[in-house]
Length: 124
Image (cartoon, rainbow, N blue to C red; front, side, top):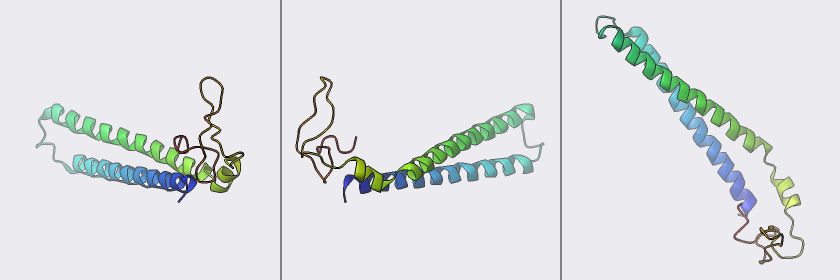
């Protein structure tokens, strides 16, 4: 497995984890909403109990919205990533790492996996 396949697998895993977290938060939001809707008013301690439950529901819903955006971003990163294009752009030129150093020179270490990067820079 080369670094491009590892990157693809990492992007897929990230998307699956984001989607799972989003579904869990969405489920929790629906459960809290149903509990709040079906709770008898006599059980609550006046307006303080209602405020407490509604603020908890609001926080969970806000987290679900944040997770939805995060899932959408992960899906976008996965769609944009093209392994064939990555291989074409990262072809080995001369057997030395092409990473630019702060002084303007290249790293120069031997490359790995047929890429133009050394082992230290291949996953950057």
